[in-house]
Image 1 (cartoon, rainbow, N blue to C red):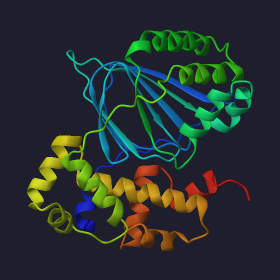
Image 2 (cartoon, helix red, strand yellow):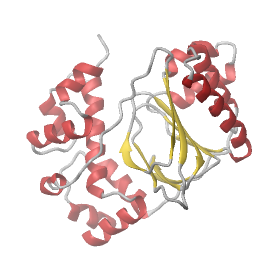
Image 3 (cartoon, helix red, strand yellow):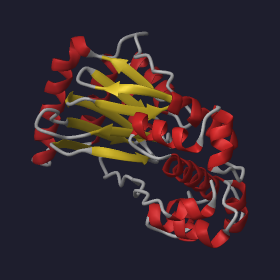
Length: 287
């Protein structure tokens, strides 16, 4: 994407979850819209009790609705779009947790332990489950855990027990099927080319349409822009390289597709709330 086009984007801050000593971050949100790309350094479980929208992950588009549960592994770029209104009231619960710390509590529960490893490791695919039949049970579990957190009465074993209960309710095989849309095809193309200096003309040509059509169609299907997604994807990869390589910041900027080093620094600070060096210092594991 040309640098001048990128400058006009108002990208959103990407969430870095600060887990407490109980290895979990539990949040219930009501009556608030959602519309941004993000990822986390930890696992996220998203359960929707009211409202309808879309989720973009793994080059697929899914319907966000009651009876659907999402599991996003660490580092998985995704977007949830739900427009809150009187006719579309959005209630959702997110559970972020340290799967490594909680795994020790699953030693006597082999099925849950295996599921935890399969679903929650970095590099694993995001999973989307239809849980309509057990949604009332899930809602009850989340309501009870909310009471514990409100009164500060829970500990790490309570966190592990909640996660194990949620995992035990997942169907063996039944996963929701994503939709292959124009925007998802475009995202798959970007996944192969985001490290290159590609313009909107290049993208439209690859999709066999005009620039205007590509932009309008992408926005219609995702409520976002091509430029926004490309910036997010590049910065997400930059974060990975900052934490898991010894490359310099300038080298990383070039590897993820930024042709101007100063613009990379500006974009990174705007989206992450830190400069690349500050991010590396704050979140790199000691060696």
